[in-house]
Image (cartoon, rainbow, N blue to C red; front, top):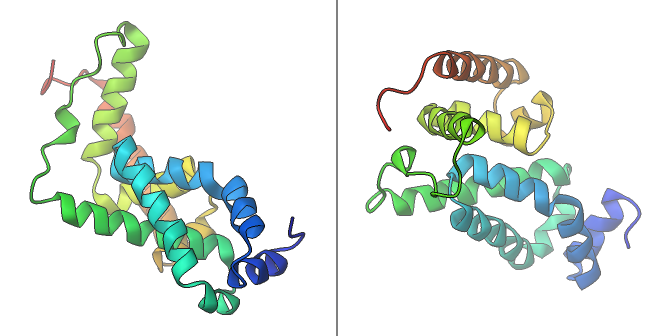
Length: 177
């Protein structure tokens, strides 16, 4: 198993299976969590993460030029998510109105449903920052590198999103039952 990010990048660039496995072990869960936050649908998130790893295999000769592997991975994920979101727009329904499964009942399920609806109603730029910072655990500097914005912009988008989420959680959602 590669010991350093440089070793890992060398292994990826050389197409070594163990390097891809190590990368998946290190980042797969965080990529998936961020993709879920960006896309809102588990199946789309799984496909987006797969797109990232397929893309890495296809572009492996260029990986030696990558300076920040973590930023590269999440920027690739963002690109894959945007591509999937763009394809789905023509046939997509409002996922904010999807009903919870019948087994998910009770006060915790209701709070979870309301939070999910509130997250889906955030502007895309704010939802991205939430997904990258909260779900993937990236710092604001790392989020900024992924989104190609300043760290202050990333932090502001996060702050605005959190304000909107707090406000949405204060009163019951009257739009859906």
